[in-house]
Image (cartoon, rainbow, N blue to C red):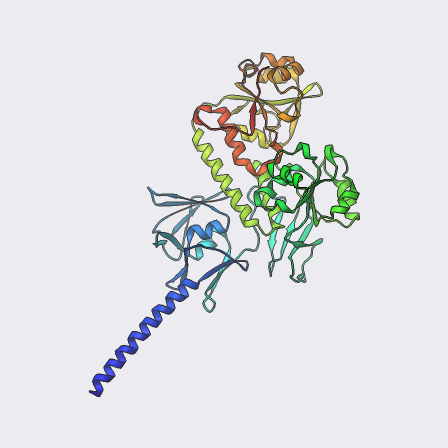
Length: 489
């Protein structure tokens, strides 16, 4: 009887041990958290778990939290991940990741659990280049980013320090030490300025800098601009003017702002630009007044996505750079889709230019607009002008006419709201030689939309609209917005 009781007790103890172990494992599995530089990531219902000593992470949730664009090919069971100009491929149930065609082996194969695809934690190192560490005591997987990569622009940098601080280097190599509100300023770091983040009151000295604030959802911090109310096309900014939350401080037409008004606004930061036509005088004056400036030189970028990538620079002042990374990578994906849609279609001849002081100003072939024409499936008739440069070139009307006479499409490179007579007859009146150009005769003349300079983060839409103008047969039912077709009288 005693032996029998011992066996029963032993069996019960074993059952309790097994149940406790299973319960503990399930509890630990449910509690595994993921953070990025100390900031916890919301993974939704997908929960990491331990398998053979490695943390298995939900591929989609973590990748998108780090700013990547992920797509799934159901037929072939393939996953494609985009980060800037890099493409990563892997197959469900396999351990290899192909980075731009080169194979890298993970510690374990990917696996599906509860309809969610999981990969081992070293996927983060292989694909993103970020270090990871798992603390079994706290059940926390930490992802450490030391620097945010730049894909298309090398004219700003974002480096990460401890305790949520970071060093941001702007377009003039000024080092801004960004310190979260309430945190101590770290010692031992060289910086030109110390800035408390997130910013509360911002002044933008260029309308091109405001689009990123709209896209990032932080327009409520915009308090001053150098573009008057009547010249804004962004609905969000128009509404802000109506509410009185944004003030025009002067400075339109490259004039100086009213510094007394700027002083009253007292912004935490003024985003300005330098370069040949830059705002150096304003920046110097604001510095004398003790007002911080950060240099956003996106307009100097030759790469169309380099211009857009500056959204990450702006985002760093709000702790939203991974959101900005996602916006950029989603745009890259959309552009890739557009290019695939027009592959193999006949390329129309495209001329682009605007009259200026008796000559025609044409976009250099190396400029972002020149590249848009090419990638959107157009044959740019001025492809030999400005090769390797990113601005515009002045040529005679006769030279323009000689190249553009057989163009199927003419893009008159002015925003429609700045044209005296926004009609085909209006541009012919200014430039009589244009009357004989094929595109003008056929009424296939386009101009820039009024919001052209205010919506740089919509780069994927620009490319798609160019493609839709060049290949309307491939975009039936699609509404072009960034280019406006000029009417006749």
